[in-house]
Image (cartoon, rainbow, N blue to C red):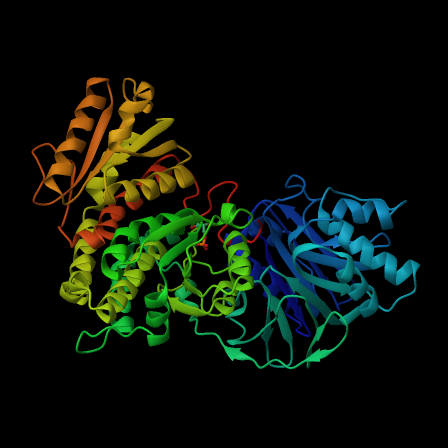
Length: 603
Ligand code: F6R
């Protein structure tokens, strides 16, 4: 949440900041701002709304150094006063921040009596504190920043400038992501590498509770006591073309369309030319040794965990339990004797998941992060990592990461199962089955017009809707309903089809949309069809998505048959398109739904 950029020592500072913020807009988009210095005068520019509003106000803003921020509000409404950057009491120090300062009210009370604040943010209190130590107590900027860092509790990525000194940006981080980008004769700061990939592919990590002094020609990493730390740079494997929309109207549609490619990429990554699994033997061994697998995740990733549960259990002979990251972070249940944690996370930065990982590490529990972002926090801090290789996912609504997660876990399940001698795992021809899935996705993608038409009739004006399904389809409807509510703002619930009659069916009235998913198992299918009849008898407007082979006359969308372990991939595709078209036809911003942000780095 919130995106930070900074640059020191480049005459195009304003342009670099605005371009960087545009790339980070997915992290938060309710207001934005930049502070630019090192030119004829210093400039603070802020705007409520998108980066385009900010950009429109930057004519004539020139300088060599600056910091910028795009905000996802945590403290105070999205107003210009609450937008970052924030300034100290005398306006000498200027700060941008991503995260949440837990003790900001105590700090205000204890240290900042008599100070005047323009907004309600925790960040403004932090920069006043730094300013107080430097100007009222006479500390150097560095000492003042360090002293403040010793006092501040919570999560933060900070970029600080002294408006009297365009030669340096001071940064520090704890729990929130921040990287240094290394330019040619200048250096940068950014929340993720995508923001600066136009300028450089050379980056340097910052660890928690480190402070970095960034100048045009040097980068010095220290701990909060001033001890220097050596840090090597690394090359980010990102391509500028990966982060463009091409001819697509929205990233979400592009990312939905990329899913067959993601499936094939995963086949090439996790199997060899003889179709043998290529999964790190250390990871296989760690899972083999576990008596229970705990999948920890949030939102769509949590749903992907459920979608993979049966497959993992049947192939590895190990029970799988799901944990909502935001719950487990502070209420870890009784664990088995030899647990193994799998952190599922597209971004690899989700604060809730990280909180659980920190605890797991303290308890000495082995962990595997399955993520799309190499070098992300969850990847760095877990024992092992498997990457999704899905390419950057920029639309806030996750699509290709979900299908990539299920497919990646399929490779893990098969590799562990084979190592265990599990018969089902030996027989499960994953490479072939995943190729069939890729074809099935392509076939569904070729039915976009049909799906769009169905959505027009069903979801254009409704306020609520239901998804129902049984077994594996139940797990998919959890994701389908999340996707629909997230971007169309239709209140939607995903239900186990048999549960409706135990209460929720009272909500069904004339015209209520009910979308049913039916795959694979004919007995289960016939029960779900019974549930459809029950809701139709009460006035529901039903739409069926059915796997071929068990379709009936009148079914709406037919999906090519795939292996039951992988049906959550093929069955989710039409529901992604349904959410997309519902959002589009309701005139909403598909890629940037209200109140949300892509990487959720606050707890
Ligand atoms: C919904 C969505 C979110 C994320 C959740 C976890 O489309 O994207 O529900 O799945 O915030 O994020 P990651 O997977 O980055 O840990």
